[in-house]
Amino acid sequence: MSAQTLAEKLISKNHMGINIASVTIGVGILTFPRTLAKATGAFDGWISVVISGAVAFLIGWLLAKLAARFPRQSFFEYSSMIASKPVGYVLTILICIYTMLFVSFEVRAIGTIAKQYLFYNTPVEMITLSFLLVVQYAVAGSRVALLRLNLLFLPVVLYVIVVVLVFAQPLVEIENVRPYFSSSWKSLLQGSKDVGLSYSGFEIILFYTMLMKRPEEAGKSVFLGLLIPVVLYMTIYVFVIAVFSAEVAKNLTFPTIELAKEVEVPGGFFERVESIFFTIWIMTIFNTSAMWLDITVLNLTSMFKKIGKMVWILILSPIIYFIAMLPQNLIDFFSFGDKLTYFGLIIVYLIPICLLIIAFFRGVKGHG
Image (cartoon, rainbow, N blue to C red; front, side):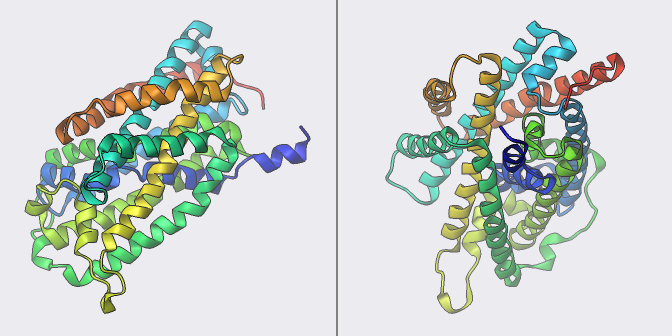
């Protein structure tokens, strides 16, 4: 491959930041106002969003530092260099399990929420299967093309969310946000922990830094990629509380969709704004699911080079679908999400940070 062709296939710092933002704005954007309102019981939940965002940035920066030490190398390759090949296999397989579970969670979310708001009479199994097949098709193509799709989708997503928030302004009641700064630090920290799932996604920096033109700029990509969700989450939370109040928000399953349902566009041009909001949200879930499945395949092919990409996609898809169908109701579904968050805390946050510390003290570095 010529240097020019390679350069065309690599992605820039800003592009990586957009990918991180796209994968972060997933299922969590619909549910986090409820969990925050429950934890803080007040308008002050926006402070929890900032705290959680700051912690996510610190962890993301450390993950970026690890990946940047080993440019053009996969997670399996550099974890094997740092901690031996058997350990590399174990860690990479654990990450594959985590990313596969994440795909299951995302596709089930589509099935559950689409049935509740759009396809009332369609079985959730069929909605989930249809979406998984589209994700499967996307991952079967070019990896860089998949990543560049975010450049097209994210501006549309942000634009529609901004439009929803602008038209929600007349519904704001100042009394709903009072009193200010009434939450204890304990409740704010609890809120920060609860909103953790909403920031899941920036760990893709561990796997996609190898595709960056300048891997040393991975830390800046993480900052850009997390800045967008932090500002977005803060704004959405403020609007949800100002429109519904904290007491009502606690009892709404998907407060962000409910906010879109309340919005009325002057002139009656759109009667169901939540349908447009839901449509663009499906775009973000599509990107998120496709990237997580792609990362699963990327890690598996880095370990087992003789097995092709398509073979892995065909092996993984039935397993992902089976796991996605395991939750029987919303309580099971949210419990699945919580357990996944704690599993990810160890697998993609704690262990890679330990690898970075070991690499630093042993002086292990990759070759560009």
